[in-house]
Length: 152
Image (cartoon, rainbow, N blue to C red; front, side, top):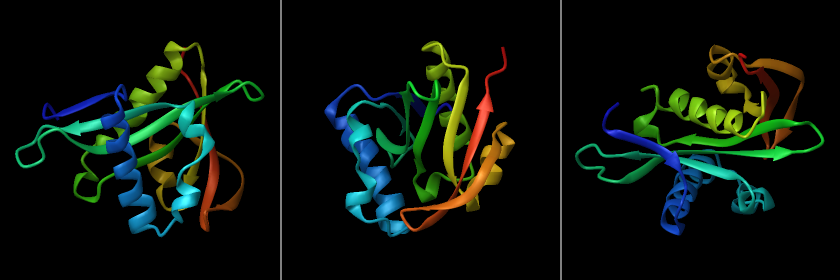
């Protein structure tokens, strides 16, 4: 894992890399319409990326996620978590999730919520998230709301 860097998006090129991962995963693999993938939250969210320094992937963005805050629920909302297919099941998603949680905690937030695609809810459960409410459709994909309280 020393050949990966997790960081906040700081440049336009890094944001383009983050969007590239999202387009490959959500639009390409999952057939989410392009107009549903981009939203107004992208402008105000804090975005994180994972950059691969592995041979053959030098400085390529291979995973991304974002966190944003809404006053009405006083929680950090984590979303748009995506990892390129050849980098999955290597612990990258978990490290990225922890990075986003740490960023939220640094902003004084102690509750994290997310809309998990049902087929990956076990991933979030393994990281301390608990299902809340009924399943629902988002971009024609079944999701469930999940929540986690920070350990204080």
